[in-house]
Image (cartoon, rainbow, N blue to C red; front, side, top):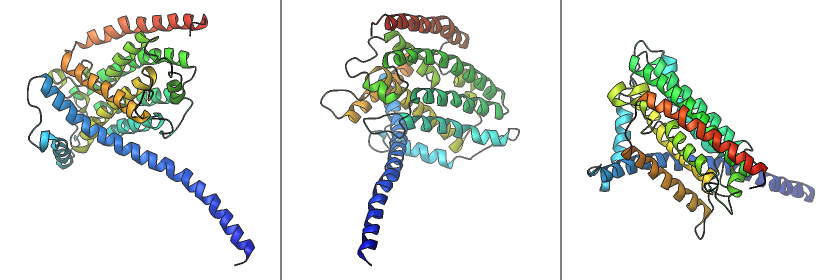
Length: 337
């Protein structure tokens, strides 16, 4: 091989190396994020059961492994070995597809979540709108799952869930508009960077409260779990589901808790900003605190009637959201921030 050929090969190899890095880096980040999220969902189930046992003065899971750590694994084995049953009068294709929609929308939403500087899958300029759009698509999973089951309890739960989630998404969208005004961007990374000196929870405390409440309603957690209220609807929209299909709804709910907690940290609590510790540690610490808060809400608040829930949203949450937006808009126009 001559000098010219050797030089040509070396130049081509130098061009391939950065190209390979550009391809492998996002793949590795995607795999790492998926592994971390699924591990978080599994760990969160154990943490919730242990904390509920502590707060309710009972033991909680303590038989399978030390401190009941293997209970989640036992539950996974149980779900995997359950009969994958499809109701005979159901719309079979829709019944099967519905659980995958909620898993897809939640996992895709994490693609635009910045966990630390440089640790994200996609840096979209409309990242916040992307997450709100994906959460809206999650309504179809619940609605289609309940409708396709051909069961009255499932259908009532689906109608409740669709009405609740669509209603509270309005207040969630209004609550984050204040953050967009302060940051001047829909990019989640830029929103975090804008909070280096002042966390947005201080000037946007009403928006913060509205967002947390709307997040609870979005994930259908107590006191907003009316779509699957056991004493009224057996199990609501997923009454007819079993096996892995039920497991996908279950895991999707817990991943939704992680997503809302992470989004709260990004929008109002400075994201990964904090002293001494590495940024990624700060991000996960703040997110974990909000996850614990979600569990505390479940252990603390009673379940209201459905009409009370909807009335609270339209008569209390909506006026507060609009008033907060108008006041903040006036302050921003006056040069207050």
